[in-house]
Length: 196
Image: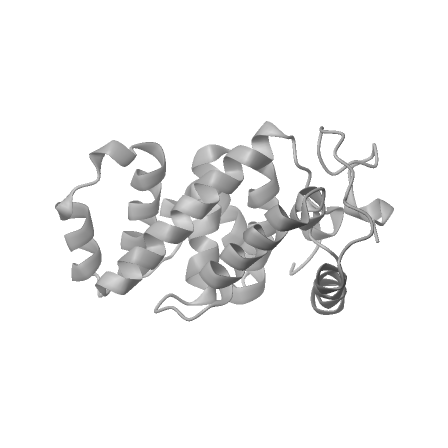
């Protein structure tokens, strides 16, 4: 399942010696095949979690719910949150993978880089700016979040349910960033050239 283009030059996904459970259960194999079909690759984050299929399932379920499930937030907006959080945390894996997703959903090759380097330099709507400002504060100074922050989101047009979703996506990527950084997770090489 692993291709040489899916890992770094050393042929690894993380710095840890955690071998995937073998054999993978049928549902995991089917999910990996679906990723290969739709994306042209199996994201290395899934391979990294494959050492424990229960953990992999939990990760996939939470990711799929937050990033692909029903929400007042568009898929692009959710990916923008992922990149801005990952920028604050300087997470190489998520900046690479989700920067590509921003390029894909926006159709704008520059937007992924702007999100990664300084989202404030991008030509964003007031709604997007308010959303990303909240995600940034929640990442770098979570203890400062007050009702004023939530009200700024309401004033920008977000429902309370959407505020929950913004916080949930930001929280998920703060967790993912820390795990990816801790284990030196490497993004699939293919991401660098995709959607350009």
